[in-house]
Length: 288
Image (tube, rainbow, N blue to C red; front, side, top):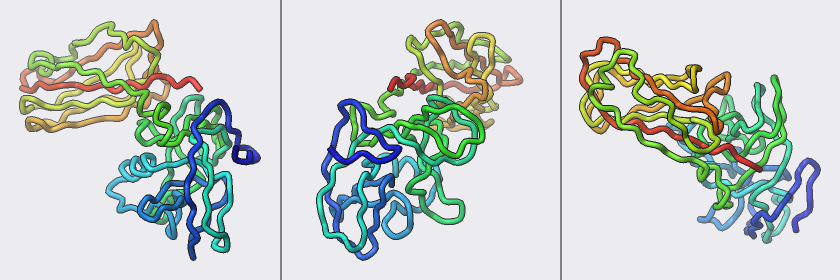
């Protein structure tokens, strides 16, 4: 067992993995640092920073965060300096710990992912921020409050394959035919139940007939309309997709066993062409 840290607790029967840490002129790892395994150089490295971190060309912050989450090995419970020799260390793939977060409002179950440094092109190695999609998440918040800069969280390595957050996602397809696409405030999905307690996190439309008018999809939990809608551009070619992350301020995107989903299509003029698949991503509420 690795030594326990202050504010770092390993619980349950989580997987423990051994990694090499190589001696390097710039490689420094401190306790409570998020680390990744550089297979090309056979060594653990901190996620953040310019010297040893996961520095990427930022096509988008979302893509860089997903790239880092997929490589995330765990939280360091050791210290490695430039004076230390190469050695083997053990890393837990899951732990409860206090983590620094971007100041804001957090809820129990809020997903947390890596945060980009405000002025540089790298990720922080010890600070997280709220994310919506589990492909970007490495932790689940266990604290509720506003103006928080630290929270209790359960941190999950990408290598804990049976408990990756992405495995909690189920994608449900709905077909939007030409009649429904051209509808004017028509509810084409009514009282549909996901069948499990979950959160609607993303909506994606893929056109199979080129659209000639903008389409707007509104999602409802019972009588409550969600904040986020999905808008299809006026001209969308066959196979072109558009998506929207869903994050409702009142948590109407959380569906419990007795809740039902309605979807309204509104083309605005009821004459435009278009049809396609609407894919909704639901994430099962994590139980830790």
